[in-house]
Image (cartoon, rainbow, N blue to C red; front, top):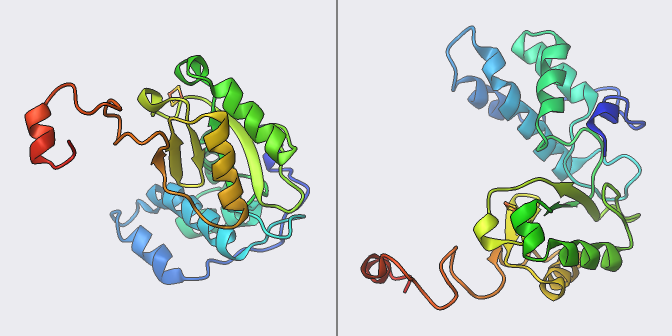
Length: 218
Ligand code: FES
């Protein structure tokens, strides 16, 4: 998925309206008058979440959240800025999808700590199980695979992000179990998949043991 191609994505609805304007007003209420452009990022997120719920999904029977150009133009109008200002923000951040994606956007971290801990096996398991490559979407619109840089959960490498959730301490086997569960529309428990709590050692706390006991996590 190339961001540079995104505004020219083949499928683009003519118009876009926010379904619930009270959510838009709540976003603007966070900022002083005259600073409506501060709402560009949360409005882009709102548009993406709305599309995830109701479409349009482009060629896919059931897809996930993305931001049509018409939504960016609507946000520019609401914020009183040139559309280019919104395009600049939307094309900069990888969390905004600018063309249709699958219902489950699977972002696979392959940066050094994840790679050292086996992300290549996780990637191969995903591509083999789904029969698609990186940047591709399954024909049923359920899964898009995307290679990403470090997602900040290196201590629990290798890991993936599916929509809003992190799945960590993965193996080829556990990631396939996650995909199978999502194929049934069941979101499995997020976090470490090897039984440990948070980023604590598998054997329990190795520092701050008293505090861990008091917090009830040891
Ligand atoms: S390297 Fe994968 S989360 Fe940091």
